[in-house]
Length: 466
Image (cartoon, rainbow, N blue to C red; front, side, top):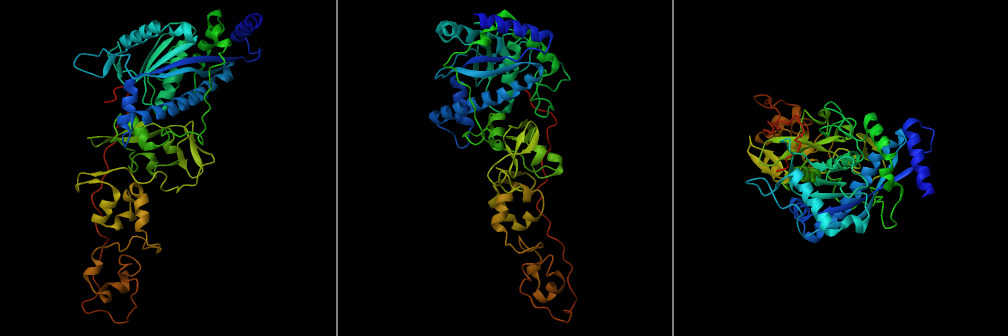
């Protein structure tokens, strides 16, 4: 008791000064995952997972989400607040707590009703008294619809940390969006309000993938949190149950798929058919998808449309050889060696309605020729398959650049096109001095297939996931 009073006094002093030593605070969370999340996990994977596989994947991702949430919480240290989250318990249910939905839907729940259902479930389980957690969160696979008439990915009891009413319900994909959302609900529980409409910090009204400061709390948020943790009612943060565990997932030990850009897209859009759009002139800074250009957001194809939309990039995603994304930057990090021009292999699907063609890279190149590998976008979207067609001959890696070469004799075309358009057809040609009768034909590079890329959605699709 003496230690707790001393610490509370120290925290009170911190509100006014920075002279007191920063104390370690621990928020113990009871995580409940309902069956809708498990089912969504299993179905959105490609190939689909069994329930057992989905449950195991969930546990891996929960640990990563909490680990990276603690990274975001560490941005409060500069304000004299050292707080971390530990798992008090994780329950993955075979039933759903949320069971009432908006009219004519089976997957959109009123967010306030969802929170009330979770609170009732916790009360029936006598969970707060039994586990003595600091806050509880329900991760759901359903969509949440707010009282303001918009979709929202979470709802939280305000300033209720250390109370039985300290609960939150959150849509769980999971992607890096959910890491930001988890850090956000913790701040709500610690009495921080939204920053404002122009903010790009964690407590922005709407978080977007390209927010420059989505890894940090603002000064105003930090001050609100500092004032709250100095109050006697926040004393639960000073004691920790020995059964609580702090996940410490490293990129080397993580066995899930949250660092795979195609999986990020599938989860963001809740659809196994989605994939990362890897070659669009107007995105990724007009470069192949790598480096800083992919460390805030990537673009994902919306199935059944010609649209690519932004999604949150996960910290830890490989962005260059020996580099990973860290807080929006492509930073040096020990990783297995990768081809810097083909970080994630081929784009999952090619959709070119003007040809028309929809399929994978090999059938496309078998049908329309490996010469497409010489130019964008195919040399990027099919970077891995193009390697299998590469002859290794400098300047003639993918054969002739004109399909017209073989329509003439070697004597007609090779003297002037041997090292350019007809490099393969003329590879073994030995020159002759005489000009062929009729002169040399005029050849041009074969017109490439119409692989004009799709338009890009300018804004992040907040909220509704299906």
